[in-house]
Image (cartoon, rainbow, N blue to C red; front, side):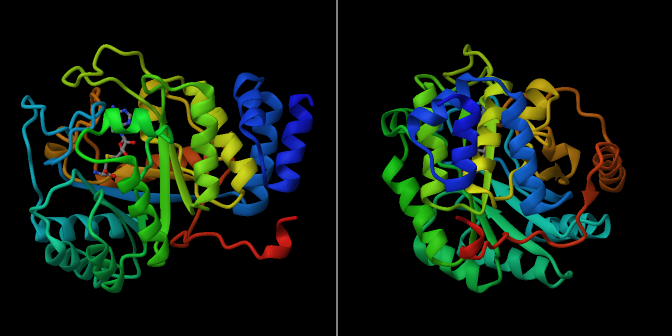
Length: 345
Ligand code: SAH
């Protein structure tokens, strides 16, 4: 089968083999992106969802080998935002037009179950806001409590579907635990997001194919794919940045195969290549909204020249950009897209 035939088959059957995905990852982009964009149009229309992300703490118990927030990085100044500061920040983002707040942090046990619950309640009392949590691996009872407090969504990237690579890169945890958490989140009714990085050491095209199939298996409602960007204060600091073209291809294949997930054009992609994935199937973009004094310290990967702008100004700029590429700004909260069975043959 040539790549065109593979693409048609994946679109029609919503299934793919590792071999087929690898062929697409090796192949040309024109038809792949064209078809991915068509499916995006069909399922998501021209709406782009804008999400505000509040990176509220850079303390982390973990030692993810690629991440600048890893606990072994002693060069990083650590910060925590107070509950009131987080709520005020969310209010400002809401006033600027954001209807989804993504709350992300390192794995910081200072924010225990009650504190996170309080943050959820405070933000929910501001207005009709969807809350996405992204605070890593926690116990089932925490996830359950936060869901009952009103958290709508959860992002927990699987990072890599290769168990050995995963366990090497995450000495503090395990692949099994990561997947267990994902299963709990789905079971609890969170709109669940996962995703992975392109360019991790040891990763092959087969690994990426398995990454894509893992997202398919767990039928995720959101998926973030970004290139790995080396951080000098980590053990992987001397490696190369992941390929942006492979990242775009992965996004496109996910759109063909899974159809409905919300797919952001990730910040890592923007940072590493000034590319965006809007023409390869993406329909979401996030903007940081926490004060710049914190933004500078949320150094997952090196942060380049930040130009200070107000939340409103930044929102206006993204809106302009989205309109300039012929897309629309969504006025909804952008919940998960549900497909009726009859729609997928
Ligand atoms: N503690 C939370 C949030 C992690 S940071 C959690 O465990 O889910 C959010 C994401 O940043 C990670 O899931 C990872 O995919 C990405 N990330 C971390 N370091 C990175 C790097 N050096 N390059 C690219 N992406 C990175």
